[in-house]
Length: 205
Image (cartoon, rainbow, N blue to C red):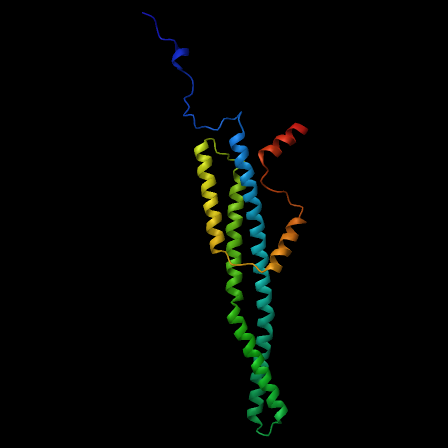
């Protein structure tokens, strides 16, 4: 009675499910890396643009807030002085009214624009894009070993991008264009390098 051949039965060899990403075939990961590179750029541009928008809103809110406080204080002082001196000239009374009106207008404008709340929303959105960007960068080190896991990861990232964009506040065109110009002139590396670029670098070395 002959013993079964271990070679024929596949004993001692690791079992595979047929769903693993072959280390010798980069086609699947190459396509994924190109998509991730595009998503990385989008997340980075959006992150920097929302941070720039938050800075813009904070700056405008400050420029409206400081004169509002000054005018309110001046109007209050003038009205108090006018009440103490009934014979105050008409010019002073008109000036006090104008100052009070300016203070009220600036205060109402601050409330209407909601710049403080908008700045907070831009900061939160920028942080969300930053978190997603770091997750994409992490995939360069912790690369999925199964095609199923890779597809699941890509689907999750796409859904997060969609969710963030749906709730993101709008960015003024001027702020967006300036942010894009700053990004274009930055010296920071791209962050996520597609597989084919890595292979080219290794070949050149």
